[in-house]
Image (tube, rainbow, N blue to C red; front, side, top):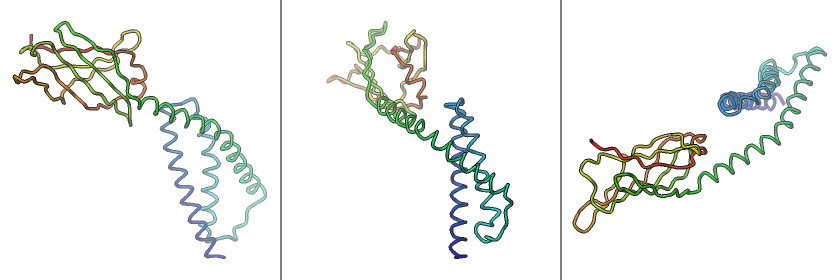
Length: 215
């Protein structure tokens, strides 16, 4: 019985430490994404601390003969009940939030094909994007009816919101050249990715093709 109690005490303590780690992770996550729900997490800290303290007092199951006063027993029981009620209260909203997150990730992972954009230099750009694991994946293609001008030094993608305000800019640096039968360059292709916040990606309504020239 003593061996069983000791093993169970150590396992319980390690479990509480794992829960504490999840609590710390959730704290910083809520600070960034949903600070108005921090009060719930702060309440959960009380029973979590009590359970860890309770296990330590029993020396991880190595000392089962410690006597508790009636008030200590009542307070411990009340905190456990509070912990259970808060958990039950949070469970439905947590499940809904998880489902919303999964649905949003599924929606953003679908490829979006934007309209083609033509610059004053006569270049026509095509863009397709999707969002996965904190990155915007893009397939970019730009072509011209004639060979690229020698003054051309690069292309950029400008993402704008529904009011036309700039959200972010991606300079095309990783690309391959498209050539015709006479080895004349008529287009560029890029299939790459960039770090992008999910909030900025959700705001994207349109894009502009920007050309950088040496003059």
